[in-house]
Image (cartoon, rainbow, N blue to C red; front, side, top):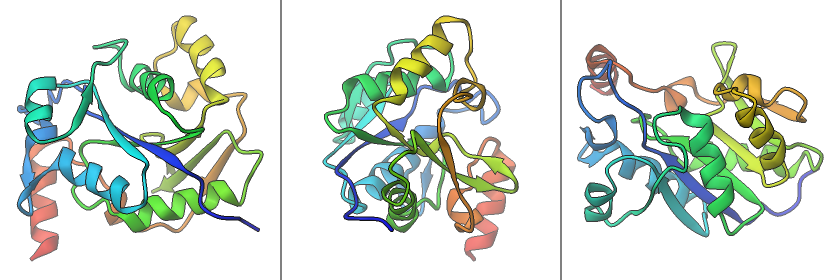
Length: 196
């Protein structure tokens, strides 16, 4: 039984190299808006108290009206971005989104938050898509930061391994299309074909 959705800070991770795409994924336009702006919009629509964009081209992100913040650990993968978001967030709950999901929406974020509200003991709530936990589309409580930080300091860079030892609750049944990401140009073409 869940209560009111928690107050939360949204964070979009935009620091990836985008090497498989060949261009910065954050600024690819889909349906008239950049991917990073679409992720920020989903977080705002779900009621985020603020939305931070971690990593990436800060000047270009600010030119889009986004609150861009440098990654504490640039070039070291998404775990550093998650830790940066947890450090900067004003709320106990932080919802992390990767910047490369063209169909992400507020309803998906709200479903993740509802699962967190229903599981007070959870440190992390993560949706499962095609039997894979999506740690870059997940809600983290601040109390997870120390554990994640220790894993990072020990050399771990993969969120899926860094969470071992935390109380992780899975969310099943969300729309796979909404949570899908794009890594290569052909992924964008598939997305466009599905929208037709």
